[in-house]
Image (cartoon, rainbow, N blue to C red; front, side):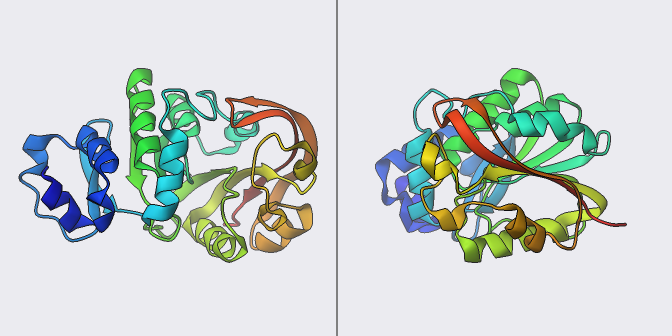
Length: 259
């Protein structure tokens, strides 16, 4: 794919480093045959092409830089709250992983036999996720999108995993939570984990803005349409790569959309 063609898709591709990363994702023989609308990019479902919206470059660039090393920032093992509660998801159901980053949770769920969709704002993160899925011998439907750009299907998912999605400021969080609820099938399960305000004392991961953190009262209000199965604040030692490491103040929720 030529530099001029990339920049016609999106001005963000004026960055040589981003163009280089995109070329790694798009086979030239495939890209040369595409006739795509402005602001689109091709990524892959473990080798199969897929077209989706390119997210805003400022946020994408920040996460691309964070994920650009060979190491996995949050490790390759699944989040422990998700691992502990994934049995609540319907057997072999269709699951969405929200803002899945480098793919640790989506790949683990696919290995358990679930049909997994996942999206993230970072094409660098998704490239690593695709390689992780390929090395595990599983298929995950990855899409490059931010939370507003993802095409949230209505009542489509048997389960949704929202693990540390606390990049979302209150306005975005309100939209994100509403879309998660609407995308669950009746009977579907939401598994969510985040940090509480006490995490600001530990500083072992997560956002520095208290407005991005969760409390029980906030989650009960935000998810009042769901039946809460478990909602718990607790502290534990996390060892999830370099990104989440050490004593942590956490909150976990499992909730059910009524039939």
